[in-house]
Length: 190
Image 1 (cartoon, rainbow, N blue to C red):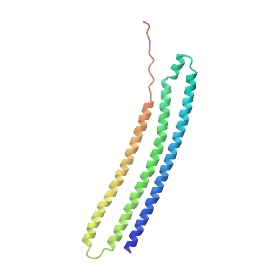
Image 2 (image 1 turned 135 degrees about the vertical axis):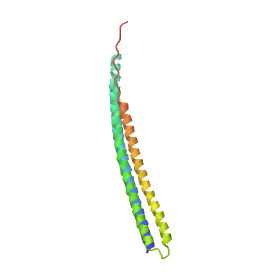
Image 3 (image 1 turned 90 degrees about the horizontal axis):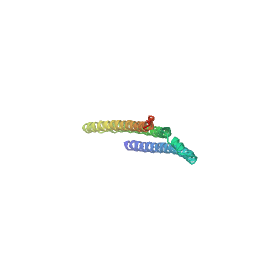
Image 4 (image 1 turned 180 degrees about the horizontal axis):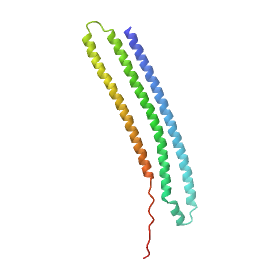
């Protein structure tokens, strides 16, 4: 009877693992699709901007017109565009990561619950005289449960660190976009 319960638990665990793998694959595909759409839109926008700039360059008739094209505002617009692109990518990656973290946490909860149930069933049917072995086994089991809690804490920390690095990268890109306007130079006649 115990062997049947064990086989059922193993079968259920495998079914959960397959279900989680399918879900994670779906999350990956959806994230990749969103990133592809963002990149396609960015490529179209870049092409339009390149065509516009080319048309402006071809229309230049003197150096003053060229100087007007090379203004700091042009660089600021490009930096704003890059920051907006980065923010969109950041959002997609962050959402995908949150879903992965939720699946990992749920998997840890399920594995922990399955192990607790397994130990309860296994020790319930232990033969008389095996109390010392059962006690040692339960101690080892409690240690393994603590390992699960450590894995959970590590996964939570890793996700938090990932979010911080994404925020720092986005802030860096946005900081580079804040181009200061140069002060007007005054010339004195000599």
